[in-house]
Image 1 (cartoon, rainbow, N blue to C red):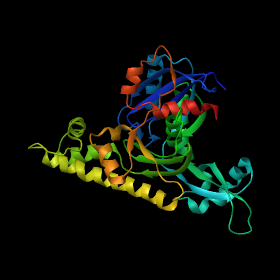
Image 2 (cartoon, helix red, strand yellow):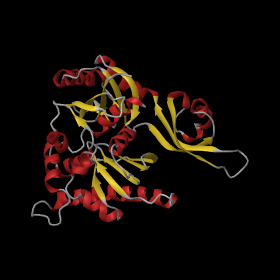
Image 3 (cartoon, rainbow, N blue to C red):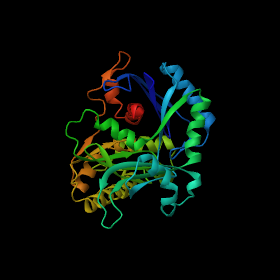
Image 4 (cartoon, one colour):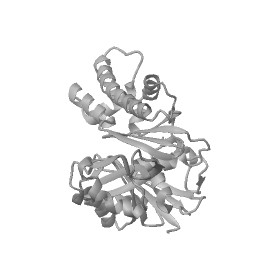
Length: 350
């Protein structure tokens, strides 16, 4: 395994990367982190639509950040991807993976021949019948062309992808680093085009859901319904948030924000309720919130009030040694911008 590796998060608006030294040990060092903006339309809902444009941004990112390696772990979102709970007969992980195309076709909306399939084991369970012990886990099915578009962009930029990982798993890995009593944590990332919910117990992912709503939908609604440009809509969204009182002239904008945010909050509450109703043996301890959309003023408090769980910001950088080129204050102020990229790099040893 490479001594140095870069976790690479290709987002809708930017590419973000974190370089770790000694990533394959228990004491990795965060050497540097950097991000480079992407033009609108190059990436949509986690899918690279213009590999050449993304590759150009990656080249600029490497030149400006002066990363010392081109070995990267790529992160994948959930567009055209399925992640769901699955129980299979107990056997080796290799045999489980080999059997997936024959077991999961009815669970997918696309042919298994067009998908990359994987299985994340969680626990051994006893069956009710005579089939013997079984393994419960998560089925992961991603469309090949979505993964290949990421790989193509990396290759065009001269990078070497040593692994591909799921962004929610990467965030969870970063969040749990250094946590002494993880318990059952609901990890919510409010992205631009979608929001992901991963619920873990003692650091092990148990449940994943994706909600097709994020911060970009709110910006778009303000732009369309108020007849303003995207930049003005973004500024207005950040200025107003979810206010208790609305100034004259802001009533319409505040109503739009409340309407769309309430829909997302309700979807999040229902997702958590579904898990708690089906897993009463795993009572939720807290919610950890991250993502650009979560920065909306008042969102965290509204989620806590609706869900009735404490909501805390992600703190992925604790207990992590920082290199001389990393400013701790800047890292903290980035509000978890690099949490996915950090988790990707941390996962390089797995």
